[in-house]
Image (cartoon, rainbow, N blue to C red):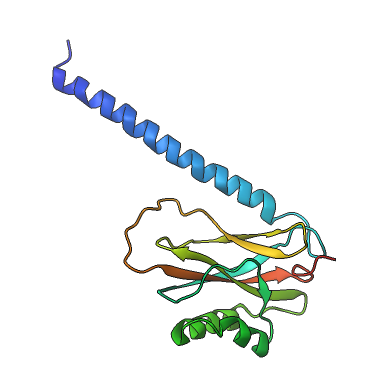
Length: 167
């Protein structure tokens, strides 16, 4: 016969296993969904392909999420995109864009993808029915962190050539 103390650990172990399995299932589903959309097709109306990405996050940067990604391949376009960001944050976004170095068969794009208490770790691209490219932040695995000021996250990405155009 087992002592009562050994049996008391069994419900806790079952509960812990069920909780961890439920959390893992959501992350796997999100990852499978993101992988399916990110790797198919090329530019020109298909699913845009993100070749490289940089996520830049700042606290209380004062910007709302954008609806679509915009090209930032030249200085004027990058300056226009960063005009509403705080000075320091705009500089970090510009550094991220410079570090990505889009080649001749690639396009550089940016979008404010999240404002809130959680910092996304990746993005995926999708095309709207109207042909615009939207960068979507991956779901944060463990949200719920308390914050006193929202964080703004900008995704700067390199897309395959034609990724920003619908046709």
